[in-house]
Length: 162
Ligand code: THU
View 1 (spheres, protein in one colour):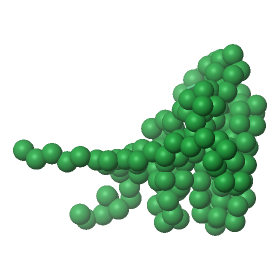
View 2 (cartoon, rainbow, N blue to C red):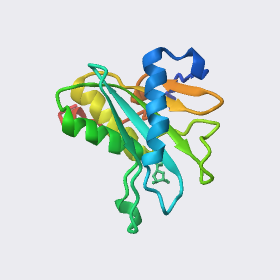
View 3 (cartoon, helix red, strand yellow):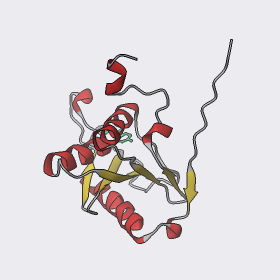
View 4 (spheres, protein in one colour):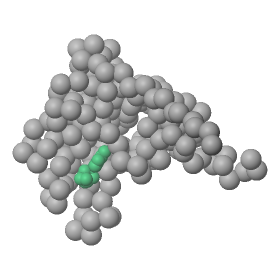
């Protein structure tokens, strides 16, 4: 029996250590929480995607009485960006959330498994890593590629002969 260890790195920043573009991206994600439609969970999530020409596209979670039909903020932002700017690679995405009392979370949340898979598809589509900024009032996590949040992932190449 052999073992394989997988190391991932998460950088932990104070908000004031972010560069101007990243701070703006995070602030757009925070603002986007107000566009959340979340009458069922009361958990408001906002996301903002940064494209390769520095265009920013926001998204917010959208819920439905038929619960599984709803969509996370991350995929709302990514699909909106993809629909409007299919030729522009995604460089980064920022995510922020408010708890059921409307307070911004102190600690970052990380994207769900489905959103991780969609972000991975974006890395594959544009052959470009997506920087992921996860906002918390106390600190901001930065992950340099979704591959760090989705080890042993499945991509299109896996359907070709190994
Ligand atoms: N949600 C997101 O939008 N992004 C995440 O990263 C985690 C969860 C949404 C989905 C649902 O509307 C609500 O938060 C509660 O799960």
